[in-house]
Every structure is written in C-alpha cells, then in structure tokens.
Image (cartoon, rainbow, N blue to C red; front, top):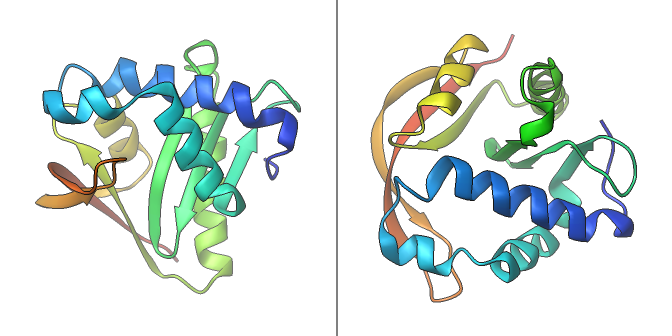
Length: 155
C-alpha cells in the first residue's frame, strides 16, 4: 500500500469508473448513474487525493481505498485483482490507519443491492447496522441515496 503519484491519476480514474459501473450502475437511481461520468470520478479523486492509499505499481494501480475521518469512504479493487487476497490486504491497511488515528469505530456505506461488496465487508468483520439515506455528492449537488450502513469496532 502506498500514497498516490501523479502517474496514477488516469489509471485510478479508469479503475474507479469501471468498478463503480460494475457494482452500482444497475442498482442506483438513474439520476445518479447519469452523473457518474469518467470526469466525475477524476474530479472526485483529485478532491480527495491526500486521503487515498493504493495497491499496485506506479501507473498501474490494482486497488485503492479512501478514508475520510472515521469513514471508509471508497474501496475498489480492479476486476483483474479480485480473488487474489488484495482486498483483504487493503482492508487491513485501512483499518490500521483508523487505529493509528485513534478511531475505534469506523463505518462505511454500501449501496443497497451490492451483494458482492456486502459479502466482503461481512467476511472482514464489518457489521451491517441498518439502512440510512446519505447525501451522495455529485456535480449537480447532493442526491439522496439509500444505503446499507456497516460498522467495525477496531481493537
């Protein structure tokens, strides 16, 4: 795991955009899917550049996570790296960062219907605590999105 480099911007944008389409496009409101363009993902990456941690070589990232305070805000693994154990290593890195920051209870949101992600979070010890509506940031302002909330108590 490492911080991002400038050479990672475009491949990270592609990784996030394709991963989001794969896991979310069919289950989120059409208004949100319409706004999730490649440029939108690039802009969102650059806005949180300092919060990113990547797996993979420079210029060819295989996955990333984005932590904002006590939230695991984004977590993506490339399709080619799924099933390799990389996601578990990335989650361990994110949880280690929470612990180092003194955070004892972390949370994340998972789009309702994203069963693959939900299975992974459960396998990693995250507990679904219910459903809630979040303000999903878009280029046209916040859109409400119903999500599953997961939490993890960190020892």
